[in-house]
Length: 467
Ligand SMILES: [Zn+2]
Image 1 (tube, rainbow, N blue to C red):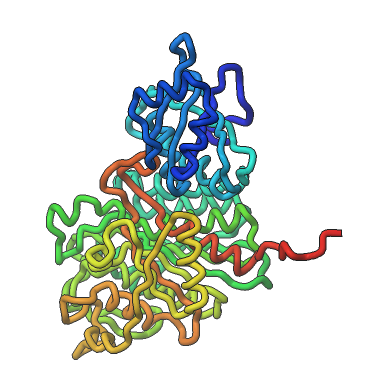
Image 2: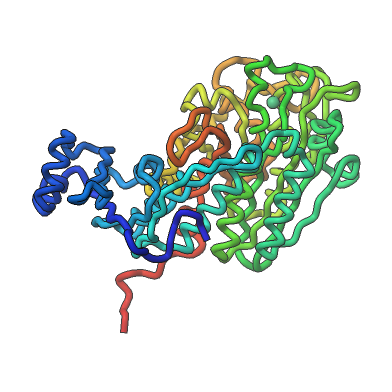
């Protein structure tokens, strides 16, 4: 059930024509004279993004027309944000995927995060387009909202315990099993790096371990960075650098959102999700620059900077996840500013040891309007992580290529031969657009889901005999 999407038309439902730019002239010719004259008077030319309402003879809202080039969710989100509150039904030549994107964009544009501020703004409603895969759109919507809300919620209300609880709740809804390791128990259970990063905070560090599905199915493992607030530790961030750091658990939120898609659509996999949840805080027992810490893998790490903490908590989880030889291992992390310098805030960097799977993710990103961009695991840069007193340093000794050296750091903890993909993501919109309000975003979940569905639950061959 999604607000502002209705099962059927009601009395007074307004037709919303969705017209591609190249079909606009032909469409206009088929309209009644009054509509043609009205659009002419508004100087509409049929350019992409044009949205017009058309009155009837009494001046009442009668029709609307949306012109588009490519039918992305955001085209329809923009219409939903601008149209007056009424019930609309799409009329246009949309594929099943485009109709689904229309519904998803509409749903996201008319949804508000209202935990701290209510709104009584009235939104338009869309009748579910017939061609849309309604259940899939609803799953995408729920997963997106789940992830966005976790990220947008301030650190005060989204600490390590609350983040892990969100994972436990999701597991309950989907019939998954969970175990949670809290505080000093992390040391006994062999997660020293997670403990070292989180030990200074008043809120204890913890690890969520979720498993779901048939134990004999191919293993899919997902790890998400859950730094609920990142002050930078003793190498404290600047005010500007710290401002958005409630979003430093965006990788964990993305992992949970993807997990929700996988479980709700019952992909035939054995899913495992590991979420290290910590707050990188300052106190007398905080990790210091120059300290050397132990890791689950047994590699010693010199702390060059306490603000490169995400890769530390990820390292223990990647060691554990890859120890059971998963078919695919995926991690999401708000890891480096360098990835944003290279690709901006809305194009996550994808690193992968599996060329075929990476290609499928990029392809899925294009078809679901959820793009990523691949970057190289350039081995020669590994030397920049050398330490004189430990197996490696947690920061590179050069200022360039930071997203790559961070990925190379993680790769040290992934078992050789593992099909591993790493996503370095912003997980946040700094400005608001229809369907994409300022706040958390789970970039990549549609792209990855598309690639995973193709791998584990391929569509039956349409060429196959039908009798
Ligand atoms: Zn940090």
